[in-house]
Image (tube, rainbow, N blue to C red; front, side, top):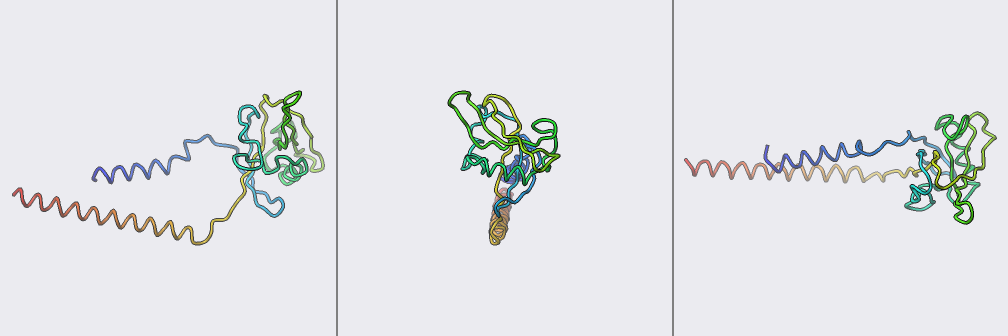
Length: 180
């Protein structure tokens, strides 16, 4: 195995193992709100520790940010799917929807009762306190030709690698013949 082949194999192995190096979040739950499919997770953090997490648009990951009604809809759609006793006994994670820096430095959110679908807590939480906050990622389907483009690129790369190996083998054979 040549040095360039070893490097390529090492790069592929590192790329395959890279996702395992990141910290794992809670298992995602798939829901549909307003005709859009989302994967919803939760993470125990504070607003002060991860302010980029909070917000509707990128880099934020809370599409309900800025709307208490939408936070209610997400909590209702989740109901008990992320498990009981996440925020406190009988409640799921907090769907934060606003931040108030004036006065008490609070984050406002909703937590769904996992035993009664008709009950949610509307919470003012200290921005520095750690709570289990829900966040979401919209599921966007991959266009049909994209996997084919990836397969074509991989085939072309493998073909180029084979051609390079043949060229190197021919040069080595010629050098060996010249040395004899």
